[in-house]
Structures are given as C-alpha cells and as structure tokens.
Length: 478
Image 1 (tube, rainbow, N blue to C red):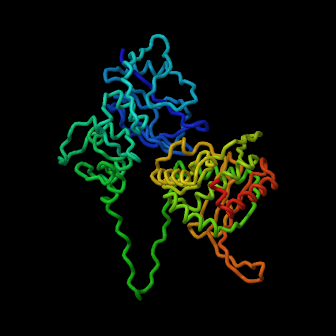
Image 2 (image 1 turned 90 degrees about the vertical axis):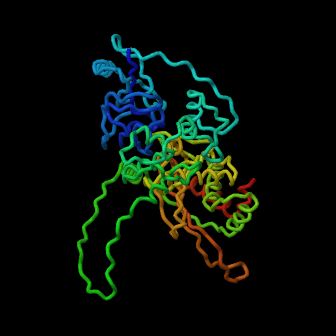
C-alpha cells in the first residue's frame, strides 16, 4: 500500500481557530524534500513558513491560496508516494476525519486511523540514533542531524552565539555544486540547496534575481534579505521640476492598497477593543533625571545597552507583582490574575503593529530584559515572530517617545486589562523649596484601564508604585 498522509490547517496557540493559505510554494504533482518550504499560512497574529518533514509528492491540492480562512484541522492537501494512484487518494479523502487536537499540527503529520478498506500508512521507520551534545542547537536541526547521522561536532553554527541551525545541518548534507549559472530556470531542489534565507529566496523569485554565485554577507556566507535587495533596481523617481518653472497641475490619482490579512485582523481587534471595553485614563509624569544618569552608568558597569524603555518594562513588571489586581486578563465574565508579569511591548514591523512578550519580566535583571527586547524587536522587523512570541501577555507598554510624541492614549490590547502609553522626555521648569526655578526631565505616561476589571483606585495605586520606581531606579536592582 502506498504511504498517504494528510496536510491539515495547523493550530499554533490556544487562541487560534482558523488560518489562511497565503501562498503555495509547490504545485499539485510536485515532489518535495524534507526541509523545503511548502506554503505560507497566515493567522490572526503571524505568518509562518511551513516546512516539509519528509520527502514526498503533493498528490492533491484541496485548498488553493486565497483570502478565505479555514478552520483548524481542515484538510488542505494530501501528500503521498509517487506510486500512489488517484483512486487511492480519492479513497483516502473520502474516509478522512479531522483529528481534534489542541497542539500545533506538523506539516503532513500522520492522521487518525482511516476507515476500513482505505490504504494503511507505511510502517514507521526505525527511531534515529540519539545525539548527546552540550553544543547549542535548535530542536529541528537536532532532529535532522539524528535522522541523517550528521556529526554536529564538526559543524560551525551560524546562529546567535554559535548556535547550530537547521540550515547548518542541511548544508552539511549537500554535495558541492557548481557556482556558474547556466542561463536556464533553476529547479526547486537547486534553489533549496543555495545557502540563503527563505525571505531572500522569495524576494529573489519575485524580482527574477539569480542567487547562484551570489556571495552572501550573512553568517558562513548565507545570502540575506539585504544581499538580494541590493540587486533590486529601484523605481526611477519622477522628474523634478526646475526652480522657477511654471506650475502645472498633474493627475493626483490615489494608490489603492487593500488591507492585508494582518492589517485586517489588527483593525478588527482595535475596533472591537475601543467599542466594547470601557476605557478610562490615568496620567502621571515621573522625573527621570536619576534614571537617565543611572542607565548611563549601569550600561558601562554591566556591559549592556539597556534603553529607557527596558527600565520602564522592569518598573511595570515589579509594580504589577505588587498590585496583582492590575496584572490581569479579562475573559468573558471572568478575570484571570497572574503571579508573574508577562509584559507585551508594541513594535512597528513590516506586517504592522505587533506585540511580542517579555515573559516573567519581574524575575529578570535589566540586562536580561535588554537582551530579550532586542531579540524580539529584531525578529519583529525581520517578520520572524512566532505565535509563542505573542500568545498571552498580562500588560502592554507602547512607547512613541523616540518619535518626539509628548503624550498619547493607547487602546487596550485584549484580553489584557491595561496598557501604558509612554511619551518623550521633556524639560520642565519647577519651583524649588528655596523659591528658585530649576529644570527637571519628565516623561508623561498614560495608563488606559479596562473599567470592567480594574477600579480607578487600583489603577492609581499601581501608577503610584510605578512612578516611585522610575524616580528611584536603584530599587529596580534589588
């Protein structure tokens, strides 16, 4: 019997109920190899590349790429051996029943046992030999190395701090290839063998750029997004009108850009939050002269590059633990409070506003918070955030001070109960006890609060503690 397997809509995170096929990277009838990107799936929060977990053929494509959302567990395609017949595929689809599961589905994970009379899947292969190592290596890279018998001790990791990635192991399995380009279209396996990031491959395909022979500037010569964008020819700007030339009206036609999937979700969630959550606002302007001075000294002593926002995240987390009635989520008619503070930070990314989470920030040192936020911001700007980076959160911080914004009110990020909007640093004249005038550095911050779960007094007490920590930043190191 031929080995036939379903590919269903995966479930990434507790809140995911549906997803959209944004793009298929393989066509019906195409063979694919393990590690090859099969498709892009968009959810309410992220867009993920789905990679194949074994070598097989896309025998039947049931759901093409479109804007239509499909529920978790829906059958999207059927994979099988090349020898699988159309009759066997038809029988498999007719007998298929989606499995109910609360964990993330893998691409092509084996389905529940088919009905009687349908082809049974091939017996599982022998378990791969386990690798015992102290080296830093990703879970997928370790599985591939164990399955293919790769000696990882000989590999040089291209990841952060020398971590061995899936691509490092995959490249170790590839034979040497000629660098010269023959002037003909490249086959999928040839494209996959080039040491380039998935985003770099997609940009190259969009602009008909040949990656063969291109020297990468990334770790171990990996071709990056920047390497490919350097070869994209910019659109010629409209000719400038010389000074003093007669003014003439030109066509002022709008460029219509429909919302993409992520922008639609963000717009819907913000609209619902503003319409259904009874917001009230509390404002405070703490002094930050001591914080600015301490940050400069601490960065030298600790060897870090912590920002003012990192200290704000730390102060928020400490204050939330001291005031657990603000460290909450609202679910229907119930309020969930948490012992630790998972602080979401608002980040502008190519896909729109995202809110990755610094988990248990109350237990972190400033240096750890700085490293975590930097990593999350880098992933957001590269479009690489996963559902585990944004699922949950008990409070949000949105900082627009770096753009010169003095003050603003933020919309609550449901199901969280509050969000802190942070403005820029301003010099303010104050009268001293001696009657003299001096200047202090202050930041105006606005706390938006869900009145269904948090009372005004609770929000005020939280802000009082937070302000004290900002004005006495040495307490953040206790």
